[in-house]
Amino acid sequence: MSLINRRYFIQSVAATVAATVAACNGGTNARVVTLPTLPALTPDQLLAETQRRTFNYFWQTTETARGLAPDLAPDAAPASIAAMGFALTAILIGVEKGWITRAQGAERVMNTLVFLRDAPQGPDAIGCSGYHGFYYHFLDMQSGMRFRDSELSSQDTALLIMGVRCCGQYFDGADAGETALRTLADTLSERVEWPWMQNAGPGICMGWRPETGFLSMDWRGYNEAMIVYLLALGSATHPVGTDAWALWTSSYPQSWGTVQGVEMLTGGPLFWHQFTQCWVDMRGIRDAYMGQKGLDYFENSRRAVLSQRAYAIANPLGWRDYSADIWGLSASDGPGSATQNYRGAVHSFLGYAARGVNLNSANNYDDGTLTPMAAIGSLPFAPDLVMPAASAMYQRYGSAVFGKYGFLDSFNPSFQYDTFQSGHRVGSLGWFDTRYYGINQGPIIAMIENFRSGLLWRLSRVDPVLRRGSQRAGFTGGWLG
Image (cartoon, rainbow, N blue to C red; front, side, top):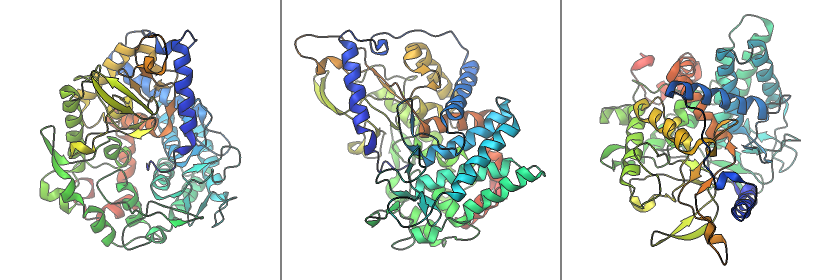
């Protein structure tokens, strides 16, 4: 998920901060001044309850007739095509768990696919949902057309297409309805013109806008866009050349190193490690670079978890509550733009930002804001570390972090609201988000399922596009054998 074009919610973040400040002055938002407890749950019960509530987030907030999934809730927001990809994936899990029937799931999926097929595609700045098979990052929830000046996004289109393809693999019945669903899923996948997004050589561009053309940067590893290249390499109709993977991996040597005593191919925020592996089983398969290092991307992601936990234990900035069981930096909401003096040092805080631990510590962004998704979305990589972290957050912060749809997006125990006041101190129990983001809810439900049953990974192993894309990228071993 690119952080491009998230300007639309800046005013909303500011409004949230203002409302919370008012609550500290005697308002009604008890989230800021209390940490209410919740019923005790075992780790397994907590995972089950988290997954069920996260499914409900997608099932209940997604618009039923067209499958438009909001970027966030409960605040008003445009649809996010990445969230739509995760919403489609959540449907399969809901069917597997018996939370909805197979017929209900297939109907919702088909509604979404029909909308995507029929939504206008073209070069015009208004009145279109996409172009060359790609879709705009954000769509208007009412019209289904491009939202404001959002970009045609290669990364978010890839996440959408993964949800589409996953459904095509899952609904494998011989009846006319599921047969039509599979055909339509293939049609949507096959019409994405990946070479068109190669504006300046083999690299795949981050996006395009009708007003200004292609964005200035290509996707180059290591980050969340591995799935872009696997889909583009594996396309049955519009594949890119294998030189695209060579370019993608060309910057790997600069990203290899040791963070908090852990050697790995580094990537700061944990969503970089999670997004592709929500669907693609990276266990036991290796491309040329990782083969030389003697590990696969799954093990590399486990090491990323170890380094983040070690960073929280070291806690170089002295943030409140960081520990062996309270950790997790990734892209998430935040308390809003502010500068505060914390424990004798001046710190800057942000709203939505990609927080993480990098090879060069000067590039770290850590303002004390943690997201439960960073840990829970890493469950298969290191369950022995993630399950205690989920339990610790649930037990310590109660309904301040766990609500109707499971874990809320983020929290910052160190943020001091009294800096916004004049004349008196009003207390400082920290900031706790009131919102859920679809792109953070998605890895939670997907990775819990992969940990428990491997469902999404099984589907990827029989997907001809992902098999072909992985082989053309040079992956060998494991399920590709």
